[in-house]
Image (tube, rainbow, N blue to C red):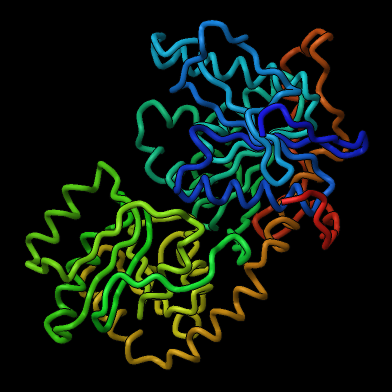
Length: 441
């Protein structure tokens, strides 16, 4: 809905959620960001804008460089979306990144935001924190998984990651493990808060999608990249197939370029042939329907954040086998709500976990998982915890100056570290969940 208007009441604080890349991609960060933006807009006092930094894209020669605050690229569920592009794709990558950053600073200032939250610390988190310092508002950096795992060993991203964690007003993390690693690197733990992902059942289509008539059907759902360890799952399934001739393995989702040869080579080497089904990319709204067609869902990652796919499998009512990495041991109770396996990356451990799930009391396992979703993973909990962090950051902070004013001097005092925000608590009581939808779908 380009050009549409969203009226923001004067007493509603403005929040900018910042990501890099296309928010409609099927990855975990993208789907989580859309869920967070939608819930914050509907159920809290914040007026929420979603800002996509797209230095990979250039502008038309006849477009203004700076975005028009009154003309977002689109509006979804009451959330205005902006896409900030480089001036030209002919510029070298670092200059294109600076173009997107200039656009972000300008938009923060002209829309007079009270707070900015960058989701994925080493990229969007760096831009958000740097821009927030320029305009004099607080910044929250969100650790999502690979930013604190792989990017620590990424020569160009590590400096941005560390700087963002050191200078952000507050840090959110999707697992205690992620926050612990960030604290080891930068000492940011006292400014951190662990907030596990949630799941919104209304975001998924009903029904069941089956890809095989075999039995049992073992499956997984992901964008299969290196960390998802699809080859480990294939090796575990090859052992299972020796005892279950009609068993099938269904891998739902696209295969990342870094993992494509590993996955295809593993299928060939295991001599499984047509017993392995590769669906290719799917619409995320169909995820639960695909998982309902499985007898056991397996999450084989060697490291992760707070995986949405595990929550989607719990929502589907399919028994879960997962490696005990990232937030997963915080998300489920082993033996009651899921079967956890260790060590990660072990085909033998994964095979034993699958066998345990097949002989377990399916009804008891899935019933406990359903109750966990209702009591611990409703969107209300995630949003309430985010609002606690936001309110602690913005309690005494005014919106940034308008475009007609001179920018404030850069000063670390513009982003005070609120006392008392920790992995187990918050500095301030939350704004109650309103229970009502402030926008139309």
